[in-house]
Image 1 (cartoon, one colour):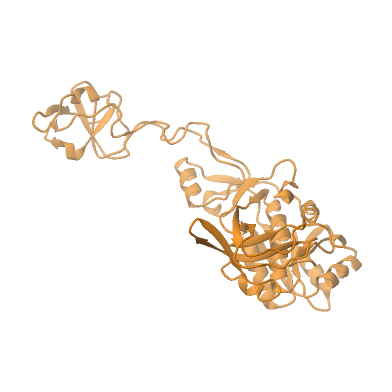
Image 2: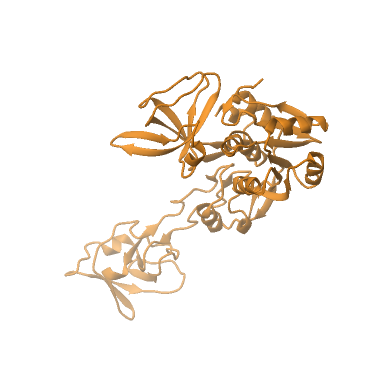
Length: 388
């Protein structure tokens, strides 16, 4: 008997353990999920810096300066404190000397050998990046669970961070009915911090395929032609099934098994069913291994055509998002026809709840977007994601 998707997600997540934390070099962290938040070891910037090329001055010394009534200050070099009546040439990014509280831009000054003529008055703080204006010492800059991207690398590099805490890449084995299925699974797992350690084509020797995968893999992902037969085969070999059917269309034959202490996410053919099953079960399992929960955005849209649905199971339909005036519409292909083609360029899944029946053109439904997800660290209840 098919179980509800919420229950299936709970059982799937229970089959996976969060990986231990390890530290990797910052250069190797791109695309990984932070296992711990990163706080600023020092203020940013750590001291007052010049924001422009110009001359460090005390703002009071520039009072009344105009082009027709300039102010002349004595130039001084070195690193000594600045005294009243003095100025010092600075490049952008250089520390502002003690005694100065502003920087006059170069185009508002005329330099001589020992003096500089200022053509404009400046206020205190002009041309200066104040200490701590970007972040304070001890401030949380990047929370746990955040995916490391170029911006994160830039900030951490500026802080002098050389290594960060992450989870090891999840070693996965892929099993599929054909080479195309293996390619699809490899594509789906690629962005989830995985390392593919084995690939097996499924045939008559299911036991052999599983045994060859077990030594190196931590998680197995399978895309068999017949999900029920494969799941029962795993059970006959001594594995345990969390469930063998889900109240989901497409993807009813999706299941999760454990074989010799290794979890197996089963996302069987046909192709759209495999995509759906991977997305709602295998993907959360692999993300849990990395210690994170994915939070996808949902938007309310209007259907651009009627949609037939039988109550009692959740329906997922790939759809594109289009806007007409102030209204968002979802365009899709009928599930009974060419829904797989609808996955090309899809912006997300139309999520039709179990209790809902037939829908008419213009009815409001939710579209779960496939791109632009946020990731957060897994909290004390590892099954929280099942409710998302």
